[in-house]
Length: 181
Image (cartoon, rainbow, N blue to C red; front, side, top):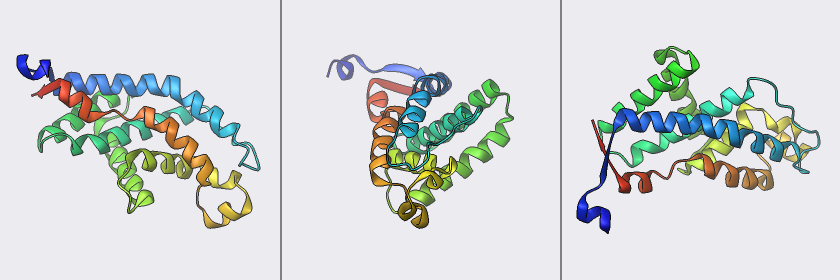
C-alpha cells in the first residue's frame, strides 16, 4: 500500500541480474550441502549416493536455469530477455565461461526441465526432477523405481521442500521494485 503511494523503488536489469547471480552462489554454498546431506541420509535409497567435487557447479547451473526459466512469467516481454542476457553474462564472467556457451547450456537445461516435468509447469518440481536425472539418482533406488526410471515420491517430496528455497519469489520482488533498463 505504502509503496504504491510513494512509488516503488527502482532497480536496473543489470543490478537485478547481479543480485540473482549472487544469490545463486549463496544458495550453492549454503543449500547444496543440505541437499547432499538429505539425499545421502534418505532411507529410501538402497545405496548411499556419492557426490564428487564439481557437482556443486551443476547444482548452481540448475538453480540458475530454474530461476531464469521462472523469471519471464513475471516480467514484460523484452525486459525478460535483457534480464536473462545480463544474468547469463554475469554468471559466465564469474565462472569464467563464455556467455554464448553458458547460454547454450542454460537453454538446454531449461528445455530438459520442461521435458522431464511435462505436463506440469511447477519450476520447483522441475528442478527436483532435474537433480534426480542429472545426478543419476535412479541407480541408488530400490528396483521398482529404478526399473521405472522414476524418482521415489517420498525423496522427491523432501527434495521439493529444499528446492523451494532456491527459487526466487518473483512476484514479491517485482511488487517491491520497478525494474528499469
